[in-house]
Length: 304
Image (cartoon, rainbow, N blue to C red; front, side, top):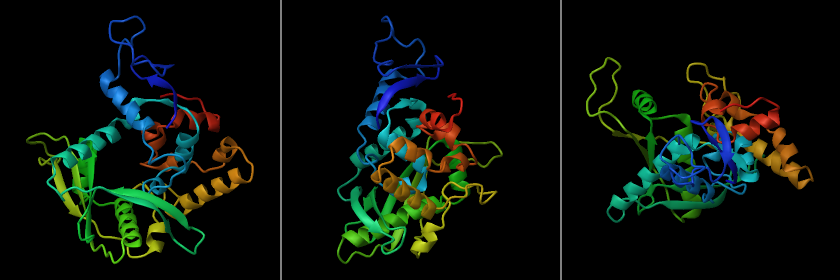
């Protein structure tokens, strides 16, 4: 990710990239940081130094999100709002703590190199990924997810499963089996965690336990994965009309246009705005790191 400047939500303005690098009390320092400046600097460093989600790499999660956001982040300097990567950064730190506290063999992140999926079809694409835990015998995989309290409550009510999660772990399974001779992954699971109260006595049925484990059934066929509509509305299916198959074709078409001489900017404008209808039509306004640049492409007025 390339950062040209930053958005300071508490001051309500765009500021230079080093906005939070001036010590408090010094001339030019941010008057009201949106979070501790030390944390902001760590979030920025994590975003800039992320080489896995960069340079056109297609990961399992990038097939489940808005492709225009991905293309913008890979190619253009953005106005960075640290609030939009705060949750992802905290989740990464929780993963690190789990890894550091694990006994030998309990946590063994395995990186899946770029591997061809959907071979022999128009959807053929190279996908990479990283598994939080792969058993030594390559029989089962685990993933770790850390959420906000509200999201965690919903996960617990719904059993901790979603089509996107099942697709992600299915990609991991296929990736292991394609890269490890003789491997046959038969079981997948996920740990869901969050900051929760020690006890809850309201009527909403909120969970008291900060973590729970759920078995994740794999999809049986590639066709099932290609039909998934990432982050579609549960109560109104079809609100997000684009499938995983569509998203793959959007990436491929963009790559072909650029290879044919079109500018990245002009090609990116042609990529459908999948994020517009994700998360009950809230991804663009709440979660998209590239919102300002994307709004400018659309000719929309911008406001964080």
